[in-house]
Image (cartoon, rainbow, N blue to C red; front, side, top):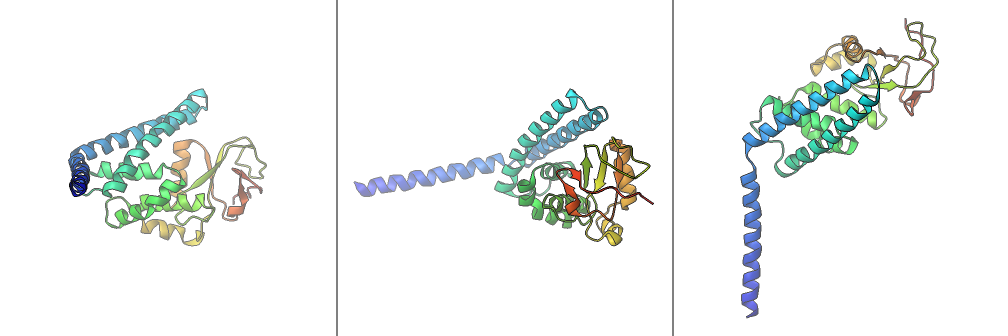
Length: 238
């Protein structure tokens, strides 16, 4: 009798695993996945356009939008992590769907981004996402770990009052500073290698979009950025 019980137990376990595998195979519908990712892409971009517009006149509305953005990001991260962990980065996705995966990774926290950085770099090498996307993610992780960035894609905003001898910067103006760059003399060559515009062109674009002054002070080091407030004066730009 005990052998019969063992047989039934083994049979039940096999059926269970077979059914689980069958469920996974049935749920892997590339068209549905692509459609879902495209919806994630448009949702991600829509809320960020709203946030950027609200940043021009900070108010309670901006706070509410940031909370909504965080909620959307959290929900999207759950979907994408489940997809990548169970299936990997699917083949034959549309460009928008692959961009959505990158955006979700890019808009996540440090541990999430670190987990999928190598996967993003691999997809960039394969031409699935742009090399500039992978470079941006790599720079952000370097900044988050208090290291100089490579491509100059990251800025650090200073939301506090500061003292400056720069005649072009009012003392109460919100300013974004280019996070320290590992090799500032060759940064434009490095940017070009991943399809990024020269740094000065990028700075102008950021200023136009966010309506804030962007300062690239090569003398600033990582140690100068503490608690979102620079510990030294911004040197007068020449």
